[in-house]
Image 1 (cartoon, rainbow, N blue to C red):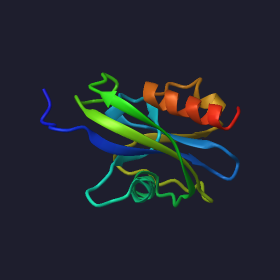
Image 2: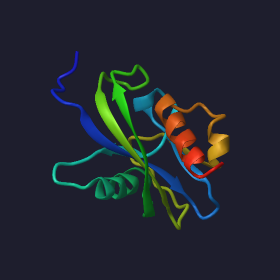
Image 3: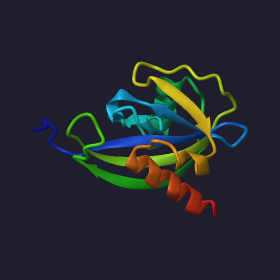
Image 4: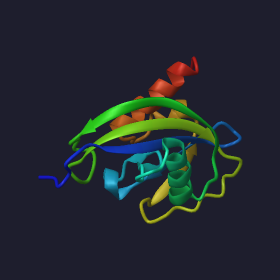
Length: 139
């Protein structure tokens, strides 16, 4: 059972370093699978501001060149630690740093090429977002 009354809007960030590598984080909320940084949009906050804030909170990275990739419905999927109905708005962006400082939502991280990320233990909706990004970029 869930206390949610409405779907929750959330953002996710495919963050690329200067080498074109993507950061993935391992999170207990996703049963140790790799995901992209992200979280809920706060009341009165734009999606762009939310993705900037969430990237900073979860990785310590400042991001720029934010581009919308896709949205996805996430309804009570068992890959998440609690029963939740979210609408993910995922973006790609760049960072000039690789100095990562994880918050308590993540246990580990990896920088990888997006094509190689698909070979890792990645949460299903993150896989779809990466594939959509690669398709849009013609890769």
